Figure: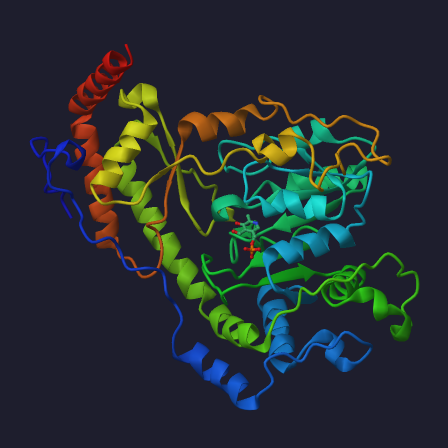
Length: 446
Ligand SMILES: Cc1ncc(COP(=O)(O)O)c(C=O)c1O
């Protein structure tokens, strides 16, 4: 589709007609299959079958077990352990990795907060390593710089569905005897050199929350090939400490149990959703590749360059914006595109270490635990500047859209590209508008 908006058309931000009105349909892949399975659960009257004791029900009910088997088969992992969220699964993973008071876990700061708080839940200390601009994921070089005698594990996040540099990371982990946890919450189905993200490290975590490509409202799945890690996570999920003795499991003290159990209803939805993952990802990839072509002519926007041996799944579509080349600020550009009715965001999240809990180094009421715990005799650095690439992306360069998703179509991408073109065509007018606004504010203040 050729963009009909030419240079003359007035920007919506300046009072013109927007390119798109009415927004886009929301992502909803819940259909007959989900309803059928959920009805089967409702008909059975058994909405959960977990029991916190030494019995077959310790591992959940029939739908939970079936969903776990389906995920294990799909991803080619020996074990899939369901949880009530990816946050719970990350906590279980950090626990299984053996991290506790006095230990450090290396994490990227550009991620959803749970990646790092899972470490704090174990009373261990998150140490932030910087990310790379080409894939937005943790930088192996920065990991090397952060390793200390306290490091127990590394959490890799496949952010936006982009696969991280797993070969290098696994090599570092091997050299230093560290456990690698993959937070693949945003990357179900993404592959790195033919292997699914979430199955390359020692433990992988997927999210089934409502924003994700496949969902069951709330939910998470932990993948591992280790019998020991799987059991530890199953224990943490279901009141481990009161169960271990009856199970005859040796050496299992310190299993402080939680209730991280998934219901049969959620599992029923998860079973049906997993069947759609391939189709939904294919849809995202097709639109993302189309969008990359459409945006190739704009110097100020750099779309991701994907090596042939990686398959990202574009949970979000990230881009780098150059204010220098555009001649306008990132904020102004994004505001103008939004005014045209199209989804675009500046930055992703504040680098986690800049959040007050890390700045004040206090995670548990009234104490400086675990940052200044008796077992931890280091002074972890959370000052601004520790991860310059992340800060630069957040403050200046990153823009992203969620337009590459089901049920949107190529023509929606055309409309998106059209709005981008319209804004760039009017960059000079936008600049003048911003200067005038600035002058007006200054004179008001003066
Ligand atoms: C990278 C990442 N990790 C962890 C989580 C936590 O997932 P959940 O909401 O299932 O706990 C999310 C959720 O958005 C996420 O994006």
